[in-house]
Picture 1 (cartoon, rainbow, N blue to C red):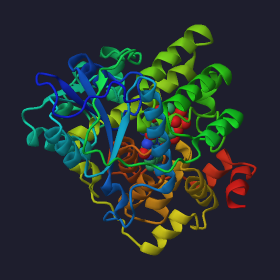
Picture 2 (picture 1 turned 180 degrees about the vertical axis):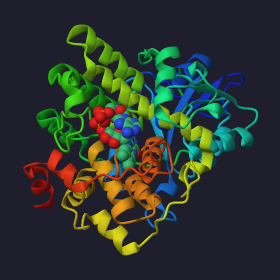
Picture 3 (picture 1 turned 60 degrees about the vertical axis):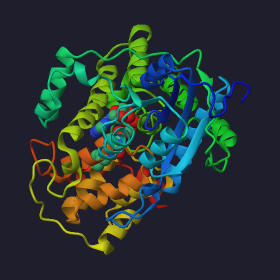
Amino acid sequence: MTEHAHTVGDTPNIKRGLFWFRHDQRLHDNVGLRLLAEEVDELTMVYIVDDNLFAATTFGLNRLSDKRLAFLCQSLEDLDTQLQRHHQSLFTFKGRPADIITALLQEENYTHLGINLFGGFDERAQLQQVKEACPNISVVEGEACTLFNEDDLPFEISEMQGVFSPFRRKVEKYSQVVPCEPALAHYPLLHKPTCCNQLRFENTSRVEMESNHTANKTAHIGGELVALSHLEYYLFEAKAAASYKETRNALDCWEDSTKLSPWLANGNLSPRAVMQEVKRFERDIVENESTYWIFFELLWREFFHWLQIKHGSQWFCFSGTQQITPNTTHDPEQFDAWCKGETGYPIVDACMKQLSETGYMSNRGRQLVASCFVHELRQDWRYGAAYFEHALLDYDVGSNWGNWQYLAGVGSDPRGHRQFNLQKQTHTYDPEGLFRRKWLG
Ligand code: FAD
C-alpha cells in the first residue's frame, strides 16, 4: 500500500494536495477530488470526525446516534478499501475539523487543499476558517453534492424565493443537471502524513452486514459500493421506479420508495449518478410519471440545499425563515415520550419506534410525527429536528431543518399550519393495522 509513499521534508517544488472528504464519501462523481488530482504530484485524503457531534447540543442530545456512527464507519471503511486498490489511503482523524485541517496544511507543507462545496452552515464556516488561517494554500473547489452547480441556477441565491414551486419551474426550464463523472483511473502518489495519529474504527462486521444486504436487500449499510448496488437493484431488478409515484407514501416496504437518502446524505451516492441511472431506466425500461417524480423529489432536496445558504443561521431559529414565532413550548416529558414512541397516538408511536430501531422513517411517517409534535403536543419544532438529527441515518442539514420549518409553519409552506388528521391518515396508510402491529408489538 505504501510503496509509492513519500516522507516529509522531501523535494521542494513538489505540489502536494490534501483532499478533505465531507458529505462526498465516494470516488465516482467526485469533482473536487478530480480537480485536485489534476493539479498535484502528491495526495493525501482525509476525513475528520467532528468532535462536536458527540457533545450534547442546547437541545440536550448529541448529534450522532450509534446507528448513524455505524453507518459513517462503514462508509469510511469502504472508501479506504477502495482507495487501497489505487495505492492510496483514507486518513481519519477526530477533533475540530477546521483545526485539524489547518494543522495538517501547515505542518506537512501542503500547497493545495481540495474540497467539494457544501451548503451547510457549519461546513461553510469551517472552510472559511481554514482559508483565513492558511492564506497561502491554493483551494481547489468542486461542486458535486447537488444536481445543479450554483452558476447554473437561474437566480442569485440571495434572491431565491422561499417557495418550492417557483424554484422547480425555474430550474426545470433553465438549468441542466450536471453530467455525472466516472471515478478516477489514476491517482497522484500517496503522501502519508507524519503527524498521523489516525482513528481506527471498530470493524462493525461489515462483511457480515454486506452479505445480509445481498441476501435480503433491506438494510442501510454505509459505503459507495452498497449504495451503487442498491440503486441498480431498485431500478433494474425490482424495477420499482416504474410505480414510485403510487407507492412512495407507504410507511414500511423497502421498494415503495427509493431508500437512497442515507447514501445521498453521506455522499456515498451522487444525485447526478441517480439521475443518470433514472434516465437509463427511462430509455431501457419505461418512462412515466413515476420516473419523473424521482427527479421531482430530488428537486426538494436541491431546493432546501440552496435555500439554507440564503438564510444562514436563521435556518435553525425558532421563528424560521418567515420570522413567525410559533405558539409552542418545550416540555421535557412530552419530548421524551415522543422520542420513545409513547405519545398514545399509535401511528406516531409506531413510526418513532421504527426510527429508533432502524434509523429510517418514511416521508409520510416524518410528516405525521412532526405534525403531531407541533400541533397535538404543541412542542418547539427545533427539539423534533434535533432528535431527527441524532437518529436519522439520512440526516441532512438542508432537508431536515427545511422540512421541519415547513411543517411547523415557519418555513417554505405557502399554506402554513399543515396539521395532519392522524385518524384519517392512519385509515389511509395503515388500514389493517399491520404497520402498527409490527412496530408496537
Ligand atoms: P424517496 O421518496 O425515494 O425520494 C428520493 C430522494 O428525494 C430522497 O432520497 C431525498 O434525497 C429526496 N427527497 C424526497 N423527499 C424529500 C423532501 N421532502 N425533502 C428533501 N428531499 C427529499 N430527507 C433527508 O434526506 N434528510 C433529512 O434529514 C430529512 N429530514 C426530514 C424531516 C422531516 C420532518 C420531513 C417531513 C422530511 C425529511 N426528509 C429528509 C425528506 C424525506 O422524508 C426523505 O428524504 C425520504 O423519506 C427518504 O426516503 P427515500 O430515499 O426512500 O425517499
